[in-house]
Image (cartoon, rainbow, N blue to C red; front, side, top):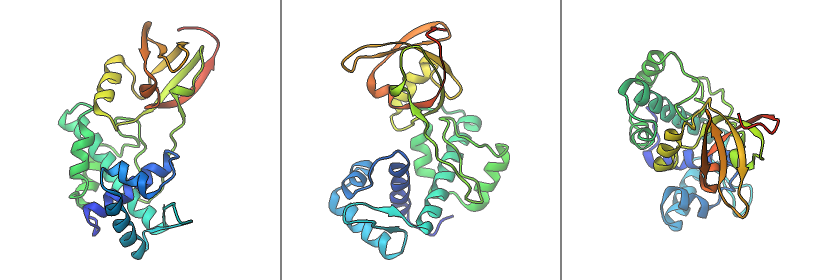
Amino acid sequence: MSTLSASNENYLKAIFDLTHRGTPVTTGALATELGVSSPSATAMLKRLEQTELVERPDARRVRLTDRGERAALQVVRRHRLLETFLTEVVGLAWDEVHAEAEQLEHALSDRLERRIDELLGHPTHDPHGDPIPGRDGAHREDWGESLAAAAVGDRFRVDRVSDRDSSALRYLGELGVRPGTELVVDDVAPFGGPVWVVIDGARHGLGTPLTHLVHGRIIENDGSTG
């Protein structure tokens, strides 16, 4: 189990997430991400800077030090292993496990983490397609392209679905939008209208916020609708 406090770990993981989503990591962005006040975020960042877990490349932005990155990866690994365990062993739905893992990740011992990893057969990805960092720290956090960037006729393979909104995740799961799904972009309505996709012959309209939660890669563009 980490010697860092749960609050420390939450901040490190939030900085990690924002960084890899391409969002500038500022005090305000962190406060919004964690649902805390800006003064609280400022105070915590000062403590993390004093312990050499974060540093400031300029007056506004924050980034993880090498030490902070390693600590963040440990939290991310525990979180994603727990999500996988809760889905595959406990039987929770994929839209239920994020909040549970948020609570459990801070109490998971190294011994139990290793046992869960062994029990699951050393998984490489969690139920949402997020890559699980290795015990040796090896990791590549690749979000790929957003479905929002796909054009009409694109055949799109889903690799990851953000777990940040459980209601949206539940809805996407009901439509069959999961890691490994291949869909075809059938139409894109103008002025921020829905993106119409075809999945296994069924046509569905996805609003703009939903398309930003789905990430993967374009595998074909031949104008077909599957």
